[in-house]
Image 1 (cartoon, helix red, strand yellow):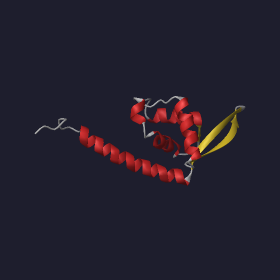
Image 2: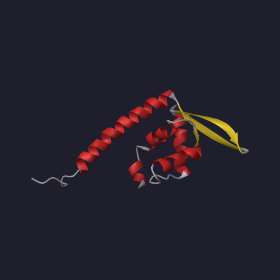
Image 3: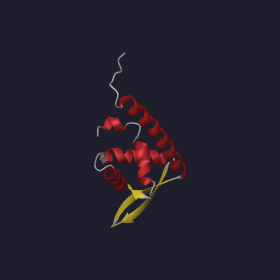
Image 4: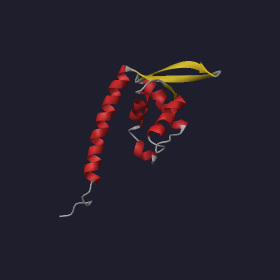
Length: 112
């Protein structure tokens, strides 16, 4: 999938991945890849800055832990993040409905 198609939707995708429970950064990336059957496989250089931005915005909370002798940051949704995810879903449904209507089965552009 082209990166341009994700613009404006990355935050919602990351919030949705965290809806089922806390995940460390790389697990967020992998869960998104798995959920989309490999169609969305973002580079870590995209995922981590977005997670940091969501954390600064109060939509997710991160905590440090040690696993296998390595430090890692685990993220979870906050209540504010759950509210934002609900809004992201509503916006996506509206957007998808509009695009479906425009690109549906009728010829494009419609001629008179």
